[in-house]
Image 1: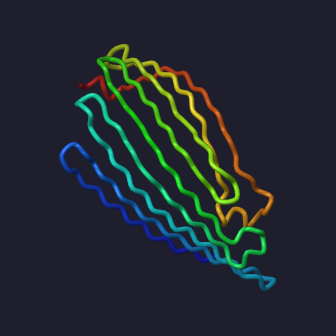
Image 2: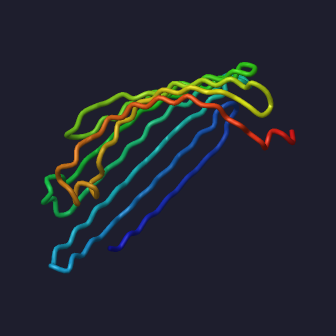
Length: 173
């Protein structure tokens, strides 16, 4: 297998806006000993804006577009486009913090799915905090994954987390 990958990332800040742009491209060539050759390509573009509402709160808005291609398309998937929109809010209020993220992924031949993350934490003192999170996820198989198994389908996940965090690096503050 031969794999080539290129990544580009640009970040700038204008007033209270942090703007991020990313571009990734990946190409994998597989040559099997029995003579078959496969090529998969992934091109992905991301644009995101983080806006500081105040010293304690910020919002992130963004868009991501991914194009997967597989040549030859004998597995049934020749090309797939996925467009995603996302929103996030993070607020810190004294010892409490709250986060909410929403994301919508719209994939060719699969459909559209909206996922979320909800999280909260409370700083008990300099060293200890408690937290709780709930989230969902939507996993879309890439063209490369489908080229190795044409039966793959999208996956949905849901998770819950409750925890206690010890941060010893805060001991020296």
